[in-house]
View (cartoon, rainbow, N blue to C red):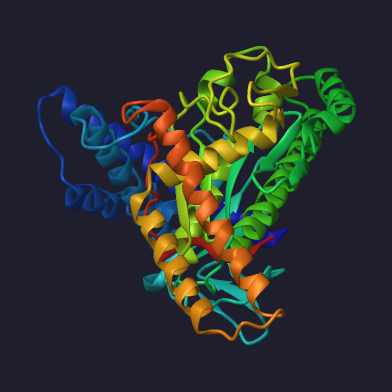
Length: 436
């Protein structure tokens, strides 16, 4: 209980320093002046010797300086977004932090001299040695640690460590992924990943917990306890969804050299009548994990444009079959082939990814030529030739599928819209250890 009070005091002090600095910046802007980061730090030091803010000396000074750094980062992101230098959604100007926020956090850097003790405890300045349940060993010495308290009253320690990227052994398998709601994902090799529907399975318990919360008087201790119960129920759902996405993305990246997915507009789909199911399935989190892990482990990742008609094309002849309602799960092409809707879409996504990635096609062709030359040098035995020839035919068949799809739509058709994966990040927050 004493350490919880110390952490709560640190959360509050960091919040007050952040709000004071934000107020000073806003007042300077209204008067047409500018205030530097050094001036804010100087004001913080002076405020510790005043009767109104003398209690700021009870926490580590590094925590307070990091609160100022967070405000500076928030302003830089805002100005970069306004000027167009920052891509993505518009970033709003910084807002005041509230003590009623569901998430509170503080950060310690090396200057604070935090340490992991020989007894596997986390030693924080002016807080003490905290008992930790480690999720994994630290791969290197951490440069900073962030202590987070979430809405479910759980505490986490998130370390920043340096991790080297270790490429996985090369694989000959490549896969296209069609994401959906009836099934979480369907792979071009026929593998179907079922949709766990984590939120739908616990909706009844969540509804009862929310009803119990509504019956409690506002401001009472029982209402605070009920809020924590509701938050913990939602946290269990979020943790299960994240764990499922990690396991599936790791398995796909481990087994395939190239992965292609469709660039879905999740924001738009979340405004339809399927909004709850779209949020529950977690497409954006899954594709982000695929992109990050492919860069980390030396795999190829690509996105096919969202306007690419993956469900309308025949993966065999390339004919365009027209739009199909969601209830149509199988259809027959003019060439006589009957397709499963999702498997056919996954195959088309794989072919479109190949068409838009000439570098990858060259690598596949080079690999095929090497295997062909090795095949010619092998003796004409009945045991070795059929297997190697089968691999050779499969690779060339994939190239023929790419050529047929590209020829069916022309060079300006929907095939060809994809985005290259970003580079691997060297410093990753929370990857080394996340403690509860």
